[in-house]
Amino acid sequence: MRSPHTLDQLVDALRCLPGIGPKSALRMAYHLLQRDRQGAQNLAHSLDNALQLIGHCELCNTFSETSLCPLCASEDRDNSLLCVVEMPTDLMMLEQTHSYNGMYFVLMGRLSPLDGIGPKEINLDKLIKRAQDGVVSEVILATNYTSEGEATAHYISELLKSRHIAVSRIARGLPMGGEIEYVDSGTLSMALLGRKSV
Amino acid sequence: MRSPHTLDQLVDALRCLPGIGPKSALRMAYHLLQRDRQGAQNLAHSLDNALQLIGHCELCNTFSETSLCPLCASEDRDNSLLCVVEMPTDLMMLEQTHSYNGMYFVLMGRLSPLDGIGPKEINLDKLIKRAQDGVVSEVILATNYTSEGEATAHYISELLKSRHIAVSRIARGLPMGGEIEYVDSGTLSMALLGRKSV
View 1 (tube, rainbow over the protein chains, first blue to last red):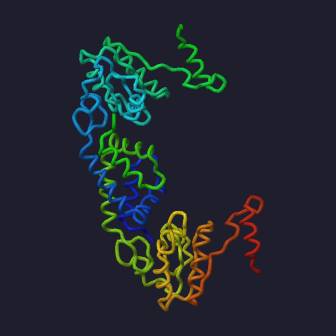
View 2: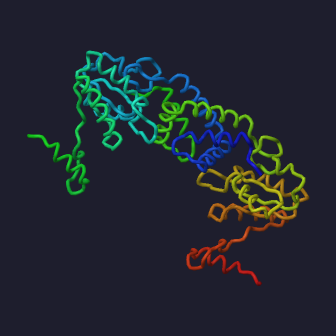
View 3: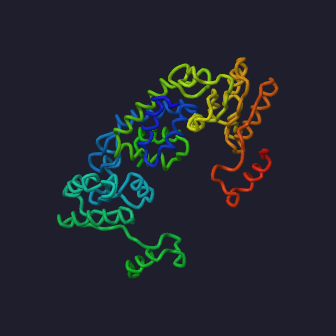
């Protein structure tokens, strides 16, 4: 016996979610139909809503319902600093430190040729235009210290330096509370190389 | 900075999916909005469709777009046997064995008081009515051999036996290709207890 056609379609549709394979999708479909029809309704509605309303901020490229996101529209920020991050979550983490008052640019990804994500997919044209607005005096690269994040930072720094824009990279070293005995050797060697005179 | 309201709503809505916490939901929302708007559209549409079209078979309680599922509507099945399973996937597995030609009843779950799933949630009233149709001569309990599946089978068998309906339970023992050296002791002791004269 085959399962109903509409159910198969739902299972297929659920597989567009990252990390969800056929078994999880089937489990989700059963759960939604059997135990949480209200939730499913709500999800369908929220998806429609989000697709309709959420676009990208013209300046910083983060998700926004308005053409300028609240942060870019704010008058209290330092327009001369531009911090490049991979994802909106990174932006939020940086904001939570309360130690940065400049602007942001959100790549919405990182260079990852194997996943088909090249310079175009992470909006580098938009970043270069943004960095050349005449006000930005320094671009701070705050991509992750993963191999993909590093490659992205390197690629962007080359692009910007060839256009005579000052570029910096956030520091690498021991984390707060980090103990030398327990830290990995990569971090430790970077902390040594990046030492500062006191 | 807060993320857009509609995005928060989408993240909340995604959490109705089983096994999805706040971080996964955020990752999914970003993925859908950034890389797969087509998929998101499709998902919303499929959810709406499924909610509208998929109900339960009047007889066996499985998901069905028609009031009787194809299996229950079939004329070639043995109406005197009724096999009780937890989920439609279990039904499909049993059908794939091609060794059973009776009818089914799908509980759509198992007794699990801690998750708030009691006799009502697994449609036991419907099962009892179904088993007392005058044609069914034996109910075969094919719930899982997990503690919850076992408890469910026990509960159902008590209910049915008090109504003088013959009840059986699928066998427990070594799996096909199972080697005594490697099988767990619980299975082995059950295989011993369930031994048959040859």
